[in-house]
Length: 214
Image 1 (cartoon, rainbow, N blue to C red):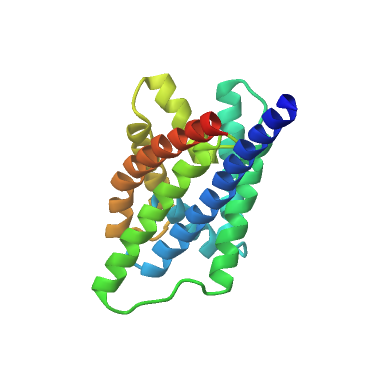
Image 2 (image 1 turned 60 degrees about the vertical axis):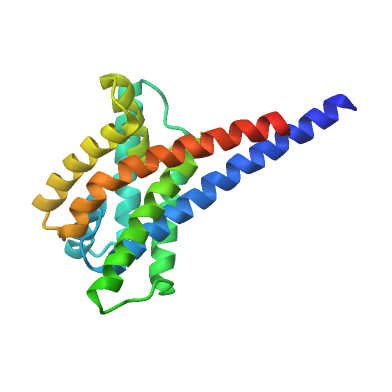
C-alpha cells in the first residue's frame, strides 16, 4: 500500500513537470508572436528566423525548428552527450505553437505606439517566464537554453549573463542576414535573460515543494 502511495505521489510530480514543460513552451511561443505583432523589433533569434523566412519559402516556425536542431546538435557535441528526446520535442512544439498562434491570429494588432510598447514588454516577459518554466521541468531544455546552461557552467557565470551573451551573438548574425532589428530587439537582449533566471529559480523551487508535499 505504501509503495502504491509513493508511486502515485511520484506520478503527480511527473505530471506537474510535464505541465511546466508544455505550458512553458506555449508561453514562449505566445511571447514570440506577441513581440512580432508589436512591430517594434523582435528578439535576437527571431531576427534570424524572420530574415530566413523572408528569403525562403519556409515559415518562421519551420526555421525555428531547423535552427533549433542545429543548436541541439552543437550543444550535444560540446557536452559529449546524445541529443535528448525532450530537447527535440521542445523544438517541434515551439515551431508548431508559433505557426498555430500566427495562423489563428490569436494576438491582435495595435496601431498606437503606447499599446505596441506595452505589447512588446508583455511578449518579452512571457518569453522569459516560459523559458524558465520548461527548463525547470528538466524534461528537455530548448536549443538556446541548453547552450545557455553550458556556457554558464563552462565560463562560471550566471544563467542570466550567459543568456545575454548568447543573445548578442545571435543578434549580430541575424542583423547580417537582414532580419528586422529595432528598439525592441535591444530591450529583449537585456531583459529575457534575467526574467528567465528568476522564472527558473521560482519554478525549480515549486517542483521541490511539490515533491516534498506529494
